[in-house]
Length: 90
Image (cartoon, rainbow, N blue to C red; front, side, top):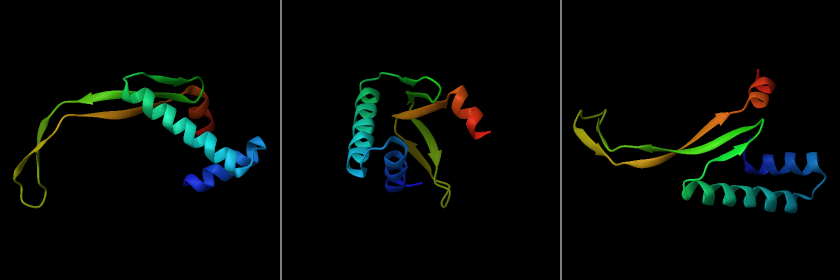
């Protein structure tokens, strides 16, 4: 499912117009991104939680040449599914 299909599903499920559903989705993405950027954790009961995991710098290998390369440290977004979501999927 891509963003347009998600907006359509949100609009039909909530009774909102597609424009309002798109605004709601964009606002959710912006709020989530902003909170994660500041290091906050977002927990949606039943759905899951988003958090940041810090990855240390490390050495890797170029698979083509086998040369050692430096992989920079970075923050990675993690998602852990909630019980209700896991139940619905299974």
